[in-house]
Image 1 (cartoon, rainbow, N blue to C red):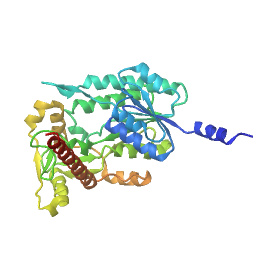
Image 2 (cartoon, rainbow, N blue to C red):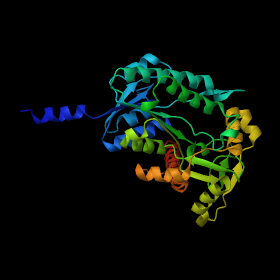
Image 3 (cartoon, rainbow, N blue to C red):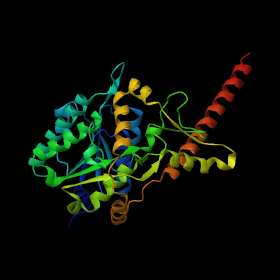
Length: 345
């Protein structure tokens, strides 16, 4: 008869292992946190720097193991993917800001994507990998008005094509998120989100689909609950579809009791293209065609997968609360510093 400890160890081996690339990024962190809460997976959080504060934070979560890996280093991915059942993969075009270029480099993301898919293929051929979830970006609402599309969109769509080229579609789910709420947190002077300002990159009357980045984790958890149904599927995902003016009004209702007036402020397109040209192209694209998430269809899928999307209202309330805590913490620190300064005189 097996001892109790041996039985638990045997059962533990049956828990699916999921590798999460770029685990300390915004998407990766959301996926790791969501899956950690389920107690259904052993999570390999892949990151370039195991000692970073972000890595240490997610490494302390339940069922999470930190693993060193870099999308620009295929061999590190090969090691990180050894023996996994599931892989969540995402890529980034961001490679440090340079004048006349910005921070978005299409070729950088393409290299990551090809490295990732090649290693997914190798892992699949070994026989254990049975599900790959790739985070892309939403396709256009009107395909006839798709061009010109932003480079950091086409790079992800080209990576999707590579998945098909390597005959991996049958085990792949592609999640295509729209713009993140978090993108409103830019640091441009005069255009930073506050109780008085809701900043945007498109005209106030254009519909703009958005989503909380942490909801990517909810979608991954949902898809994994019905893997056979959602393999070989691609889904444009969004949480809200509001105009810039409607977004500003959402914030206005939250701060109305304080007697504050919130205005929607559009960042000048010329300024956007000077600082980050591809984001300017994205703004043109949103106004011309827009993201193609089917909001009605998504409600049905979300109900099936037990996904409760984060509303913009909820996200804004949480953001304002965080700002309040940060301000309070800074004030206490400053007051303490003043006291020490006086005490030392």
